[in-house]
Structure formats: C-alpha cells, structure tokens
Image (cartoon, rainbow over all chains, first blue to last red; front, side):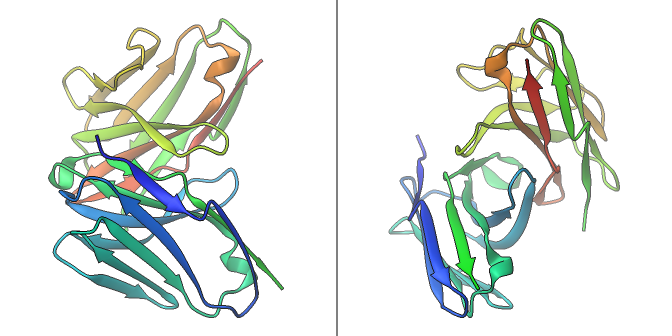
Length: 113
Length: 113
C-alpha cells in the first residue's frame, strides 16, 4: 500500500529565505507526482506536476524534483514571500492518468515578514 | 484550464438529516470523478471513485449506504451524506479526470450539529 510522507509537518521562515519541502513515497511505481498548495479552508491549487519519466519541473520561484527510484521528491521555493504561507501537499498517482491521487499530510509553511 | 465546481461551498445541517453535494465539470466531460474527504489537520483521503453510468467504487471503510454517489451525466457527480452525524463533519473535495489531468473542485465544508 502506497504511503506518502511529508517532512517537516510545519515550517516557519523569515521572508526572503530559500526553503525545501520534502516528500517521500513507499511504492516507486508511480505514474506521476504532483505538488499542491492549499490555503486554510480552501481547495487545492496545483503547483507542479512531474511525470514519472521526468526529473524536475520549474515554475517561477518553484522547482520540484523527483527521484522515483529512491521514492523522494523535493519542492524548492526561492526567495520566499509572506504570500507563500499555506499548506503544501504532495500527491502521487498510480494506475495511469485515470488513477486517484494519494496524498501526504502536508507541510504548513509560514513566511514571516 | 479546466474548471470543476462544487455546490454548496459550505453547509450546516442537523444530525440525522441528509445533505447532497454536487460536483460539476464546467468545460469538459469527465467519465471518472473522485470524492475525497479531509478531516482537520489531516490529508485528503479517497472515499470513492465515481464512474458515469455505473456504480461507484468505494474505498475500504467507507459505507456505501451512507455516502450515496450518483454520476448520472458526464459533467455531474453527486455525493449524498445520509443520516449525517457530527463525525461526518469534514471538508469534501471532488476531482474530475479531463484528458490526462485531474482537476479539483474548491471543496465543500460540511458541519453537522
């Protein structure tokens, strides 16, 4: 059974700092891995999607890497801003494009001005 | 990008009553939709897979007679929480498969008093 773990559970950093969020998964036979942002009481915003054949994806100040063989992914946020404060969820997909996602518990990020 | 809506966005109901939540794909057709549930400070957990024109597939531990799912058209799936109890209070999020991507609705906050 696939398990997704995110470390740390919470993180507080001063504005401007670069940071890394970690995600690990137990079954490497994934179709893709996705990082989401969730604001309190809100739905999900997709940040980056990495296909199983890819090593990384970048969008603006965000960079996500994937090491499928070791079951790890990282989300790098450069020059953090208070607006980045949210919970970041990592999720893996099995069974091709029609499969459901399995989520980690998330990392709650607080960026202090 | 593709848009998935949910209605209502939040609902308060009394214990013992039933509540229906709608999930709609607004600009694409989805043969498969997923229903997730998120308890406070927990991750999203898959409840069931909804397939248009057929019975939903429920995850282990999810009562199919309590959480009724109807996917009657390619753009609409409904989740009815029957005889709701306070422990059913949660954040319910649906997603729809469009092409090779999964799009999430904004979620429905259910509070049972």
